[in-house]
Amino acid sequence: QLGVVESGGGLVQPGGSLRLSCTASGFTLDYYSMGWFRQAPGKEREGVSCISVEGDRASYADSVKGRFTISRDINTVNLQMNNLKPEDSAVYFCGAGCLAEGAPDAGDFVSVGGYWGQGTQVTVSS
Image (cartoon, rainbow, N blue to C red):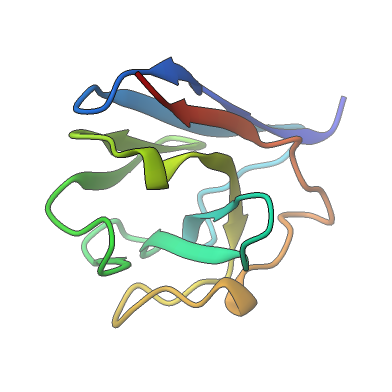
């Protein structure tokens, strides 16, 4: 079955950590720059982080710098999120085509192979 799956979200207290993962079935993510964007109710879509095809460059939104780390492995893109804040609460999606420099632009993300995942919900609350 073809598709993209995001996982790893959940409910965590402020200051906690989560590790998100994105993987594909039926095709590979390895040929694309990949990244994460998030969507919270009533807010604009926000680019969070992007990693280059080779994995040697990464970019982050100012709001997550120093707290989030993006990485990639074979057909997988991960987002380690530390020191989470309530404002990080959102549905997180992975996508392709972002720029691994400057601040990630949510408008740069495209689906991989024509597929979007369902996203993974992150809720930071005490």
